[in-house]
Image (cartoon, rainbow, N blue to C red; front, side, top):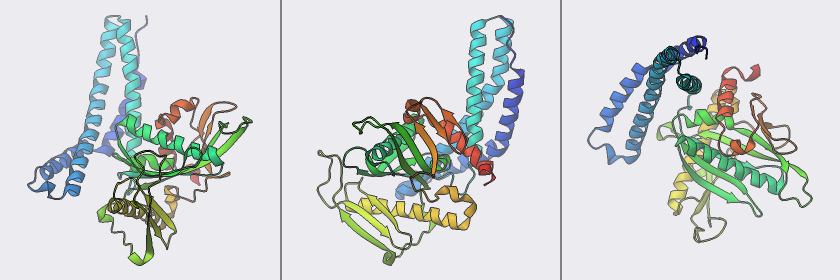
Amino acid sequence: MADLDISDELVKLRTTYRNIVQVVDPDALRASIAELNEQAAAPGLWDDPEAAQKVTSKLAHTKSRLAVVEDLGQRLDDLPVLVELANAENDDDARTEATSELAALTRGIDELEVQTLLNGEYDDRDAVITIRAGAGGVDAADFAQMLMRMYLRWAEKHGYEAKVLDRSEAEEAGIKSTTFEIDAPYAYGTLSVEGGTHRLVRMSPFNSAGKRQTSFAAVEVVPLAEPTDHIDIPDSEIRIDVFHASGPGGQGVNTTDSAVRITHFPTGIVVSMQDERSQIQNKAAAMRILESKLLQLKHEEEDAKEKELRGDVKASWGDQMRSYVLAPYRMVKDLRTNYEENNPDDVFDGDIDGFISAGIRWRKTGQSQA
């Protein structure tokens, strides 16, 4: 077998890696880790559990980011040695191993490069995602639930914490709407490109005639508000209603008025919360989500060029950003980036990193200069 030659690929990977290191700045990460370690070791840190959680979480995220950078750098240094040994010993298994490592390194460096593009004001925040069923009746409600599962599976596969804050069941199948939080480093920056109208085309399981059905769901992604954001919400601008928590039935359905709905008069934003067991907890959670949505509106007003953060998501024809087609052919295609996958089952199971990476790159290149 001929010698394995990956010299051209290595040159490209090393160039990309050097560019990444300049942006990520490992020395700055190490300094940040040292500072956070001091804060984490300070007496009385846990007197304020919320502040302590932020310190320990940021410390873990920073350590993880540095570890990824260092690991990729070490593997990049080791790969030429592996190739040289494989060729010297004429070992086909070693060549196969080196080829596999090259592919893995390429994916890892590509993912890290995408992360360096997340430098927006709120990109490092946790994300709050709201999904609403749009046009399409029962199929739209079912589609909204499929999208909810898709994002929760994505979070699970990455080891990220996800918490469903609210879920409104549809009468026949699926959900009318849901709101959930994903806690992860750069969760908002990563998932913000998922905001918009998603379109599903399939043979409807709810249609006895078996006709093809098109349905829509709207996905909204906002950065989670933090106490330092100072979002002022006067009591006179909101109405708070309480009601029974809804659900599919069973022992988990709350029989008291613990669910909370907050209406913000100036913007028309309505936030419902029923995940927690107590009215007080639901009110606090609803206020935090309202603050997150108002924070996003504030950001839009300050920078109209970043209108993709939220936009007017209508969940209907002429507004879709991604199509999921299950019939007559099978394909998922992003209409902004033209990125596509031919296995919708994998996509609905949370394999959406390709769409996310393409979306982040598309956003940074000027969104088709629109």
